Length: 296
Image (tube, rainbow, N blue to C red):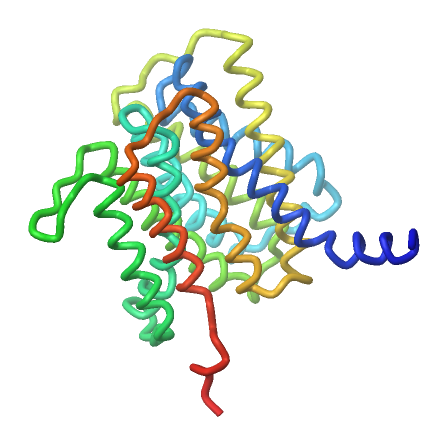
């Protein structure tokens, strides 16, 4: 019995690892929102990714030799998208709840194949369109809109912009994956993300550094270490887990975020919660490939 249990745990370890990092991911939204009590948003994102870069560098030190120009270019490109994606998401968290932010950010999943179609003429699967339809209905319900007129507040609109940037980030990571060393590019993209945020901060009026607060230091260290661990676990686990199965596990991220938000005292209206459920269903459908739709 113990042999069977050990074999089961070994076989399911990658899936369990992905579930764990999804829970950590879900908790990051409320953590970031708390951190904004001590720092302006763009500088906060800069410090967050600087901490993550240091953490990944310490873990992957032996792989960080001989950067090529292509790797530096890939790191700069992906880093810029990370800065835009997480910068806009963090600005949005100043005016919308962490639960709403998580559900809106999750729209990047159905957006990836649609953007691939627009940019590279890669035709999306039928289920991608089904997923996008559910996600769009969820977006309307979540933001309190109707089909007749769509009006987003500033926080919702800028978070949606962030989800587009995150979708583009994923596309470009895949585009460069076969051409570069991913561990070196991971460090470079985090460094560039931090640098771009520090450069953009004065443009957005963030000219003063945040005051030294132990709460801020602990939040930044926690997010930095979490980001490093998430990256390493994803690189290991996704080699052994089917992409569609991984996508379904990742779809739970906004659900965990909503749960953590609920514990912290956030309350979404019933219609908004149903909208969030539609977004999650849309995420799952966009990655589902039923056998009866596969070409023989």
